[in-house]
Structure formats: structure tokens, C-alpha cells
Image (cartoon, rainbow, N blue to C red; front, side, top):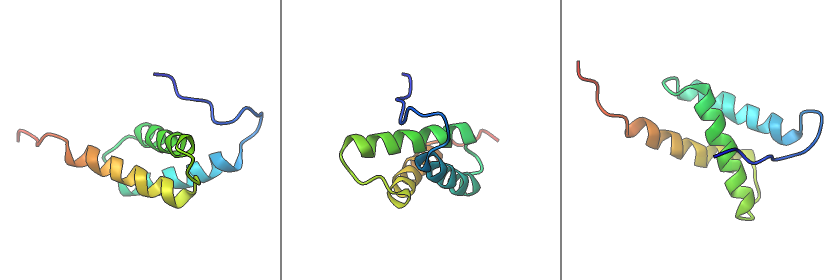
Length: 81
């Protein structure tokens, strides 16, 4: 499913800069998850929060995205070693 466009403009927006900050913090915490997956998670959480009419703050996006990422890490099957 294609991602929704958040803004139609030529340059980077304040939203994109805040998402970049959240992505960097979560990437440092979840080293086993590819940054592209973290980026997608943060973008999806931001879009969903906006769709639900919530105030999309970095704190809310980071908190919800962290819960999603923890679910990904905790649902990984154990290694067979």
C-alpha cells in the first residue's frame, strides 16, 4: 500500500525535521530493526494520529512508534542456534 503524502511542497517541512529527529532516536534504540522500517513506522504513526484528529507531536509519535517497534522485536521467532 503506498504511503500518503503528508505535505505538497518543495522543501523540507518542520514535520519532516521532527520525524527525522524521532527516527534518529528510535534507530539508536532499536539497532536490530532497519532504519527504513523505523522510518515507515514513524511515518505511519504520524499519519494515523493526524487522521484521528490528534495533535501530532514528536512525543506522541515517538511513544506510539516505540510500542509498535517493541512489538516487532518481541514477536521475532527465537534463533535456532
